[in-house]
Length: 292
Image (cartoon, rainbow, N blue to C red):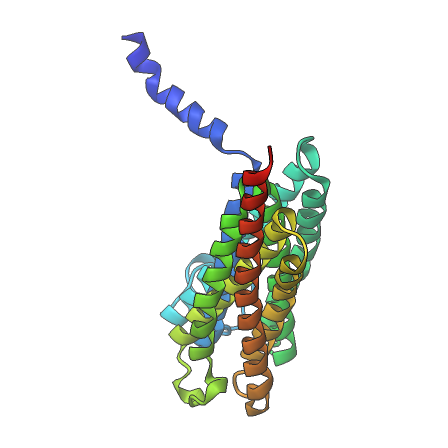
């Protein structure tokens, strides 16, 4: 009888015990990614000023704290999620600072993300109060920088559990995602009027996937492989940033050639990475077989 009464509590404690710092960092990364995509949705639907230029309030409810329409809901929900992302960022940084078993590189990355967070919040306020393209662009790239810092930190904390198979999987994911990014981009010939909010949201989700695949392949590949394979893997993340930069310039026909050139270079890098890492894995297995 006593065991039955305490079993749920025991299961709850077991669940809490299994939730470690890597899980906290992964949850924070997911919240940062969600904030970026919700920001894209707010911009794509023209909802950035739907709260009547109020910040951090909106346009309805007590003290204008709540949204009064569907467009203002997009902006309000973006702010709502970003608030929790901010708390998670600060919590991850403080936990990394206090926990003795967290890699100091990880601590440096998440603390840098925490330092950038109030800057990002201020830029978010300015996008509502001024709404200029320069501020919007700076707001976006600061968010991507925070995402990248937490992405690298997350990969580092999970790195001991990741293998060469994960590198191959990340590269394969990049090869699949890249054509989708190109197909969704208006710089390859689609009319800008047909560049719908849904297309924009999916394209940016694919862009974050490309960045994640490249960073996973580079960081884990650097631990698991040597030689030319590592060179190709390390080249992928900066090329992804170039693809993301030109892909963001959707309304400018002049970026079509640079965008396509960067996309082709990234595809070649992903393919070369798979070929070279598979060769490296085969060579390693042969050496292990022949060794006494």
